[in-house]
Image (tube, rainbow, N blue to C red; front, side, top):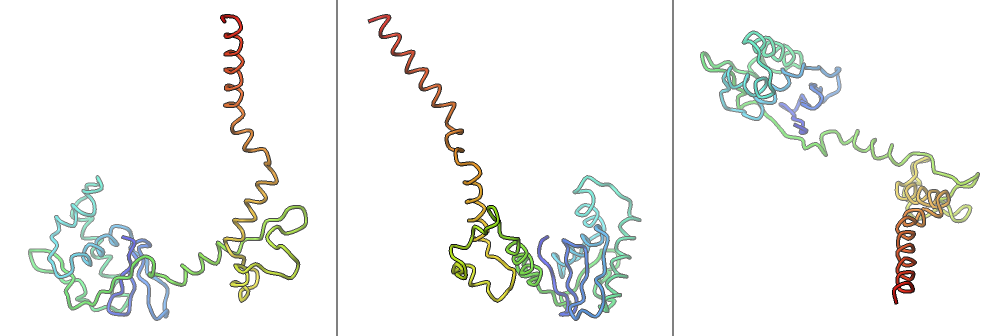
Length: 212
């Protein structure tokens, strides 16, 4: 369900967002309600096959522990048709097969966009946001720069984007800061085990002296 689908090179359907996007960017996205979105996804997955009303109700509602009337099914299909019509797609995008069910004909061109490439712009913005946090400092001096005016190689790769710090540099400085705050963290961790070992040793020595 993480994949997105391009329909007739004009519309992108994102099941994760329950939205229809215009690829040319001329209008805002159209939002579907969740059941209508699931119905459209089922039609795409079984493109060229006839899906009966009962199949829809089992897959969309009954499978998730919800039991609805046929009226709910018809309302969601009607809503789906109206939203597709708003995008400019042909009225026959969803075909009604009399007394059988619905079908998405194979004449409708469907391209699958894997989740990693579904929205490359947002993916890149997320990576930059993760790397653009302020660099941690100790006192008033930054910890990630060894000498004034000299940038580490990892930071030089980001020199074209002012204010953006490499993730590796941020992680390194955070570790240094933690070491400065807790220099005896290792001793505290093993303190209890060491004390038990020491008590056992003294008990052993006393036992030898009392019972030679």
